[in-house]
Figure: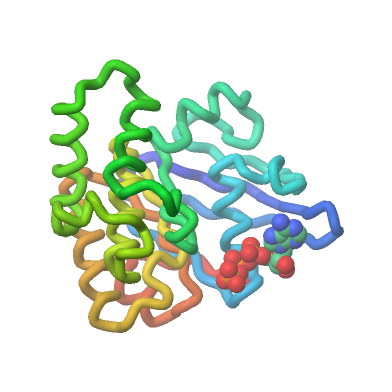
Length: 227
Ligand SMILES: Nc1ncnc2c1ncn2[C@@H]1O[C@H](COP(=O)(O)OP(=O)(O)OP(=O)(O)O)[C@@H](O)[C@H]1O
């Protein structure tokens, strides 16, 4: 591969306030258009690495050393303003538990619309509607489900909705943290198929976090193992 990495983690170590150091001098690179699996047993530090990339460690009371380059920006040393320019616009996350992505008293459409208005306060209702429906189509979610509440959606539908929310601003890098864990095999395969189509269509790079070796091998181009 001749391209420069899109994401490069160099000697990353993370320590929580209570003293645990789940990540110790981790290095890996992720190249444009690649699907890289970050694999490890439960508690190996996978979500900690995700939180470091997303700039969420300070809020969790954790400290990090090393560097995480997204293109030329070191995410560990950039300002909150620089970080917010990258987070969600360039790097987006489908979190481990998709339930956390949604306000339980909002319909899916309202959640998407608030995100659209956060980016552009003057966006028209018609333009919002168009983008909401486009997002539903992108993740193969029936458009009628846009007007449902999270508790009315099945696990697979919720995962699709969480993916729609993550790609709302056309990120270059999508992080999927155990995004299909807990779904039955058939639904898992459907959701992974949708992710692959979406990746091609939007030309995204994927960091796929999983504890499942077989799934990682099937779905990803390369694998990095956490000790
Ligand atoms: N907010 C926190 N405060 C203190 N320790 C934490 C915190 N979050 C995680 N840890 C600890 O860091 C270690 C790694 O946790 P992490 O969630 O990153 O692992 P993981 O590989 O994602 O696990 P899983 O697959 O079970 O989600 C664990 O020992 C965990 O207890």
